[in-house]
Image 1: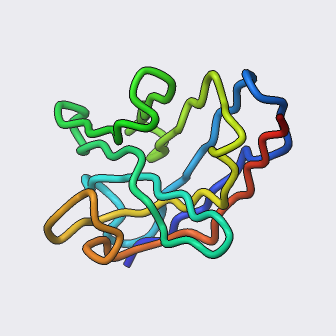
Image 2 (image 1 turned 180 degrees about the vertical axis):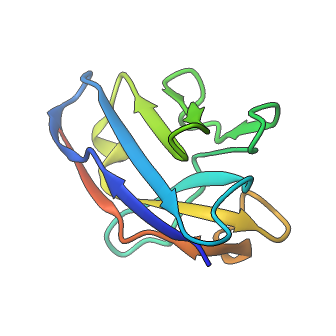
Length: 123
């Protein structure tokens, strides 16, 4: 079992930055890939970034490539989403997820989810 706890969301102006954190815990929380899926009101959860345990495999969506990064600190069992050059369309609840079964870009293929943290970008 894996528990995921997000933090770091808030209200920022367009062009600003935020760093989200996701702390993983539980009996099977070690050595799993982790990712981030934001969900805007009335929309499906959309892939933005994922990273393997080793950090050698990283994926980004085209919409955030060059603006966001997804570092992880395995000593702390924590993954981050560093968000720079934020846009109004980045506004969403950002969910941390872990342990994919197949397509890392598909929300339905991930097994564990956090409760989300709200990111609001004002224009």
